[in-house]
Image 1 (spheres, rainbow, N blue to C red):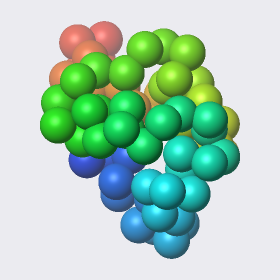
Image 2: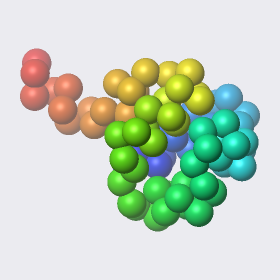
Image 3: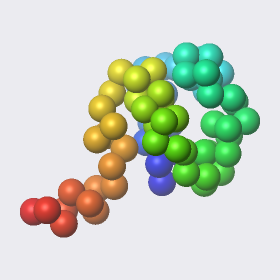
Length: 69
């Protein structure tokens, strides 16, 4: 699930969901919806990736990468 990758990165960088919300401008309720399984828009995924200073590729499904092997 996408949120697990976001959460893993938040823990690694010691960033709270509150701080992610502040850094991205994404409402905490919206982030909670992502945690509950709602898929974020591409625009919000870009904001999250930028705030965490990681590539969007980090969030790709591992299964997608195997199809190209």
